[in-house]
Length: 306
Ligand SMILES: [Ca+2]
Image (cartoon, rainbow, N blue to C red; front, side, top):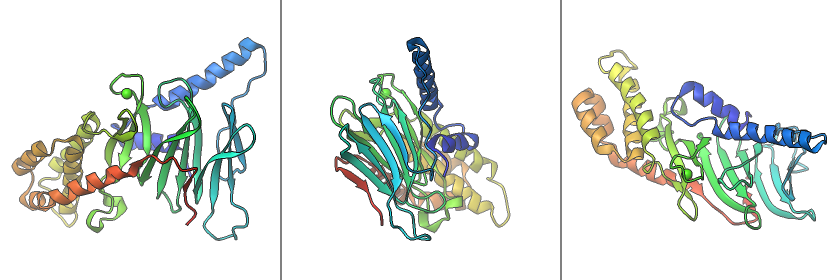
């Protein structure tokens, strides 16, 4: 299991549109600042060890709290693993617990623009890359609270950037809303881009508010469709449908489906055009349903060991 930012880097290689290294730069800056503080204070100051999956138990300080990652004892070898993250207060009491088959990453990073670093936890339910869940907790302004649960599935939050320059970063994420659409295998399902932003009380899908990312992703799908418009052979129509699905899905995400429909009617081969435009309602429904993957939950124990 790679760390969140490793996956992020891998994603950047394949798609230039998703995110930036803001979060990593923040982390590096934070580590440098910490080191500088150590030098200035005349004390030895080592950065905390990075989380490595399966090297458990793992402990890291988070302000007055201690974050512990470990595995549930007594699970027979060969069974699906069961791991947890516990956030302990100064008296060693568990204030929050996150459960899943595996803990993929634990990071302390500023995420809300207030200067008090948050806690990110990535978990997976098993399998190669599915299904990923990302949790964000804050301790800013009171007790530990869950701010975000993103059930990314095959997608994940790939970066953070303050798109509207209000001091609070928006999160750029992959959107797997069309993964497995009408039974398409994961490998040939288009992955979209989404923006997750704070609406004043919680995180919600704000892709339409910041449509540049989805629009840019859609243009890549459109270019691919255009390049394949006269291709022949067994897979040509399948490739066109993949690109058309990604293009129309991105347009729905950006709130620009009318323009996409007009372009498809003018430029796409009729077989591809009819295939995708006869599925408009289903694609819109898939996008709408996937917004429910962005949640918040005040419960003390989150996730399950199914
Ligand atoms: Ca912002």
